[in-house]
Image (cartoon, rainbow, N blue to C red; front, top):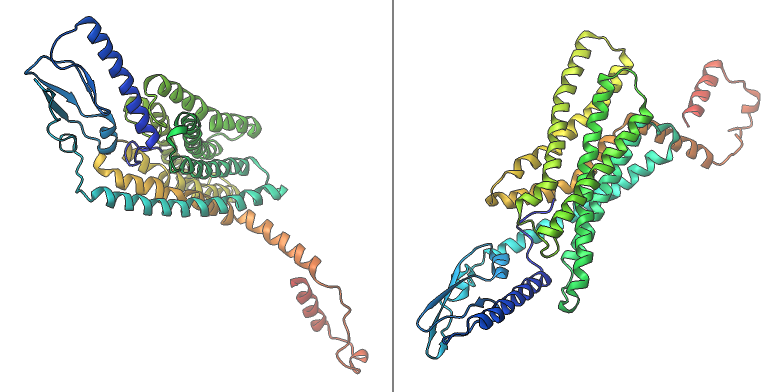
Length: 418
């Protein structure tokens, strides 16, 4: 998910904030001078802060510029005196008043950390994307693998593929070179990219929930229409994220239309997306506990046939691993302080980028049915590729010698192995 702190503000965002504050300041100063013309120091916009009109001898206090808060995340105050010669210099200096330490090397260290993190999750998403595409192709290619269970796996693969692609698109937009003359045109596309990114994240968690719901349904309901349930699962997996992301986008547009929507300063708006994700993880965890209980009961009472038990156990191994592996860290860091932000970034970006790889391995490459179908196809292809060559006698005497039954049997077995 997008993180509130950790991504440096883009030049376009800073320029937009400065432009908005400048326009507001000039309007207020114009209205102030028209209503209360007074001697002393006239209102001033000094390119970063707005100073209201003041009488001689007074000291005026204003808050630090908002763009500095975007850079350092700290608030402060600055002062000017109104003297006979006009406004005095700002004191203390803006860098001191607003917490900008020009000699601090921590920002450089943080930048290097984020750069290494970016390399790690780029490798993770790339490997996940490649393996997911292979796994999806395998499940699509073999007709015998077409069933409700694998259809759900395929939707989960697509959600992870979209998550990886949306992350690459987001990085291409956020880390592109800024051109101040194209800020307005660029910002609309940037917001659309963030909306798509948030949708892919939510859809990914929704399909993890569908995996848990499907396994739970198999264990609880003896007979049900898998086609109708699949339609409901598709609506839940792709439809519900669209509702929440659309609500977030509308709320963000009217209440916090700042920058590219990649920084979430207003926590209440961010909960429009964070809340449903946490709820889906909690539901999955409850299903996880109940699935374990049902499986233990079925195995203990032996009320299920051996084939069904093996089928449930195979499906449960993968699903029960995914539920805690892909959800617990999100709940933990949803309520974590800002001090744990670097750890959160590591879990969400570096380790989270390899989740698609794990899913492809569990649901496809380690799947016994998939392995059997691939082996059958390989043997068929291998037999077609073998050249048809006649069997020649090894010597002139062999034509008159008849092979024993045991030798004929061994020859037949060796041919069948090929």
